[in-house]
Image 1 (cartoon, chains in turn yellow, brown):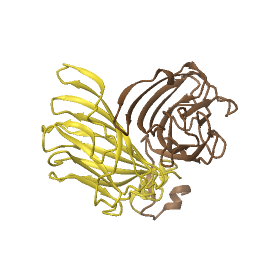
Image 2 (tube, chains in turn purple, blue):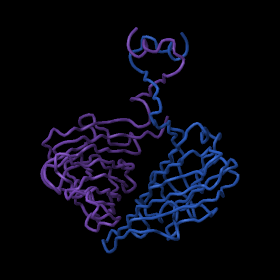
Image 3 (cartoon, chains in turn cyan, green):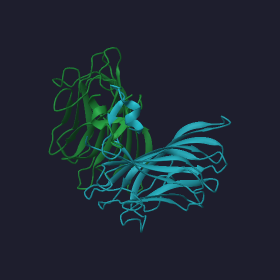
Image 4 (cartoon, chains in turn yellow, orange):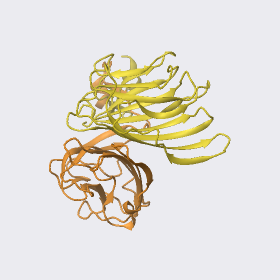
Length: 210
Length: 208
C-alpha cells in the first residue's frame, strides 16, 4: 500500500473522494507558460488539451505576472469563432480603472474612453501601458459566460492589477460582449506591440452539476 | 479499517486529500428558467443548502433572457428569513455602472441613485434592463456572505454584465447588506416585470 491511501489508513476524516475530472467544481483545463518570446498565448478548443466548448457554462482565465517586451504596451485579447484562424469577433465593451502613482502624485477612479469598444473587431485592451521594467507585469482574471452558446451574445468580465509603465498602479475593470451568436471556440492574449516575455495564463472551467 | 479508506485501499487514483480551509467551491443547485416568474432557492427544499454549512455562497446567473422588452427589465433579488414565505428583508445598498452604446455615441461611468436602497424592503436591482431580442441576455455573479449568522448583517456583492434593451453594454456593481440578525434561509431572483424566458442560476457553497 502506497501513496495517499497508505498515508491515511486509520484516519476517519481528512479525505474526500475526488470528483471525476480532478475534484471540485472549478477544473483546471490548461496552463500556458510564456517561454520568454511569445507573440501571443492562445487557447483553442480541441488543441493541446484545451476545452472551450459546452462542457462548462463559465470559463475563467487567470493571468499571473504577464510581462511585456516593450514598455507601455497594451495587454489585450480577442475571440475566435473559427478555431483560431481569425481573432476578430465584434465586441462592445466598457473600461474604467483606478490608479495611484508610486510617488503619490495623484490617484483617481475614471472611465477610459479609448479603452472601450463599440462594435469593433479590434483586440480588447484589458490593461493599458503595462510596464516592462524587470519587476513589472500584470495579473488578474477574465470570466467568459457560455462561449459555446449559439443563441446569445458572449459576455465577459475582467479585472486586472497593472504595474504601469509610468510607475503607477492601475486597476482596470473591463466588461462587454462578443456580439455573435456563433460559438466562440478560441481566445488569444497578446500585447499590442512585441512579445509576451514571461508569465502564465491558466484556464479553468466551472461545472454546473455535482 | 472502514469507510472511505476501506473503499479506496489499493486505489492509486480517485482520492484527494480534503482541503484544510482551501476555499473550494461546492455545487449545490441549478435552476433553469423557462417562462419563469421567479427562481427561488429555499434552504432544505429541493436539495438546496443555504445555512451554516458554508460561510459564503455564490450564485452564478448565466444568459438570463427576459420575456419583455422595456426600460425596466432589471434582474432583481431579495432574501427571506422565514423559509421563503416572505421576501422582504430590509436592505441598504449601493449601485454603480459603466455603459457604452454599440453605436459608440456615448459611454460613461457613474453612480445610479435610483438603483440603491436605504433601509428598503423592495427587491434589489442587480442589473440594468436586459434586452429581449433573441441574442440578448445578462450574466452575473453574486456573493452572499454568512447568511446563517444570527449576530451580523448579511453582506452581498454582485457584478453583472448585460446586453441592454437599447443596445448598450452595461457592467454594473451592486453591493450592500440585509440589515437583519435573523438568518437568511431563502433567496429569490426575478425580473422587474414579466418572466425570465431562459437562462439558469447556479448556487455554490464555498468551503472556507
